[in-house]
Length: 119
Length: 108
Image 1 (cartoon, chains in turn green, blue):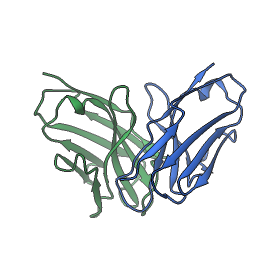
Image 2 (tube, one colour):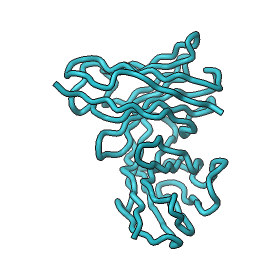
Image 3 (cartoon, rainbow over the protein chains, first blue to last red):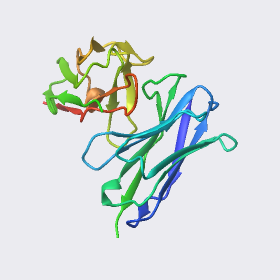
Image 4 (cartoon, helix red, strand yellow):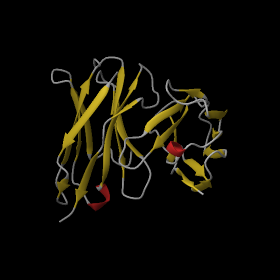
């Protein structure tokens, strides 16, 4: 059973960089897609992006210029960086993964991290 | 980008009654459609994928149907633990993957 445990700063000022990490337990990195999804307050889920860690990385076009998702297999975690945050980036951020070598739904999720952007 | 539209936004149902949730895609997603249950303070939980395949552990009262652009999630007899927000999500062909805006199932 895959378990995801996420951590990172929860309060940022406008223009700072959001940095979140998701620890992976119970799985190797091959054969999965590793993803980030967020939920702004009172709104629905928004897909941020995903990577399979071996060269296939996709980002939401609306965020593409500001985001980076990377995998560190030596540390068994993957990370999200979002540059130049503003109030609209305030959300609960979830890491998630899909087991498989092709695209698919998210079988496992982290617990979520509330990130607030405020001056 | 494929737009996923869910209806209704809120569904008021009494325990034991049937709930029918709809999800429409702006273009065909074949059967590459998932349903999630989301409760406050928890991570979303995958219930159904491939439009109609229940994940191990999803109760049999949950059923999914549809293909192409029209999909339905049916909860045959609502239990107290089923009151939540439900999202559909497509994963057809190529990202970005998109979610519907959600249907809140509340106690009538």
